[in-house]
Image (tube, rainbow over all chains, first blue to last red; front, side, top):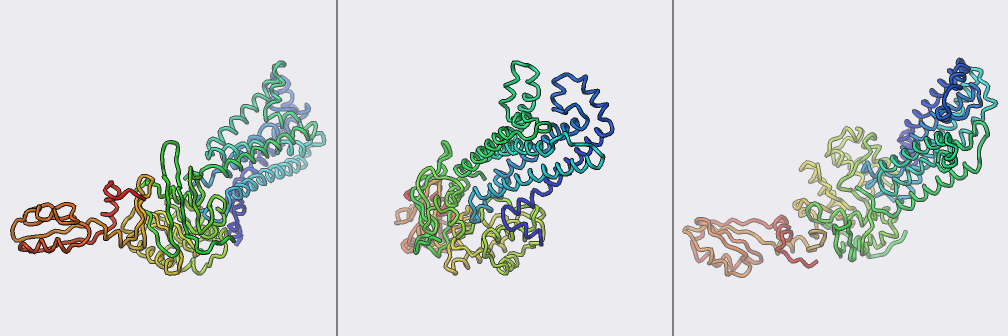
Length: 266
Length: 305
């Protein structure tokens, strides 16, 4: 019965199609978070001592950690692995939202129904956005719950702030994948551009500050909209978050505009 | 709902589509009448699918305009799609869903679909809708596609190569379904490169060649115009030249005691001349669209649209 209810609209069917990916992403985040928290709860001091000997460039990769085991655990989750899982999800689904049906050749029959192109894209993008939000919220719940379970004190860590700041950047890269895919009718191009920019901007943001003269260049990358806030320590940076959301909205709008004005393939 | 009474189900004016240097469709003027089955013929790459995709507003014409049920497809695409049904030539259903789930999804998007009618279509086409589409044969996937095209009893049904993968019995069933749509006063636009298929159900045909509409004609009128062949077998050899001067004869060739004549129009004068000799046997064949099609496609026909 529920399965048939999830065939009532493009939105519902997309939920049905992508639910498994969302569950997998949440479980992956929980497992990673549990692993980080468990390791740091038991051996955090040893890791802190080890990290003290790391070169600055390598230490930057792990992000800010307040010099505590708790900080190192949260940094591992929110600066390293969390973005990796969430960006993979958001970029993949962003591209799929734009051209998944077109590339699968199911669009001609779907679009022979009384639907606008933009309403299909809006429905799918909404599901992708809700999926990202769900993963972020459930990850936060999992992190706080696991930390409480093992007695880790997170009072110095703004986990919620980091979650929100990360959400902004992930939506930006997801929207980039969506926009490029919708514009050119190619998910490979959308995923490629978004993933390449994410990797490049991550390394530029983390490694460039080692060179003092180039430190400001790092602020021009999309990744800085997340890392520049250092939200785990400082909380949400509203300006950087707003920039990320405005850029994401702009890219999404570009995707909508171009999809409405190009020939569909297949 | 915007309704224009009496408007033709399909009308195109100067419809043109270029892909860079490729002229996929050139200056197409076409009008399909309400309640007819219109056959749209041409080989692969002639522009049939390009025409249909323009009618559905999947692609943007380089020039010209198209109206469907009196509505400009460029400005009323959604309303047009709410009143038509379409089966593409190349498409994919959702492979992880069963046939029934595919139909349910598409029916939910269109609304107002009678599930009892869906079941009767499935029974007629002998397809098991409980199986996953990924487990169905090509022919059975095609049947699911046909069900979705016929299930909402649309005013205009656009079918692009609908008999692909169907066995002869199912092709006959499809033809019966198409005739029922016509009997119901609705319209079918049937695109195909299968001349026999179109000939059996179409009232009129349009022949497309290299993106240009070569001819639009009633099937019976086209047949009358067709070049037919008659084999006249005589008791002794007869000179082919005796027949070449007859009006309507395109060619005559002697093969032993038989003269093979290609002709159009009336056969009366041909028979009179034959009876001047000792006629042993006469073989003639009904003209089919294959001959007509080849006539136009090879450039012997009238190129005027």
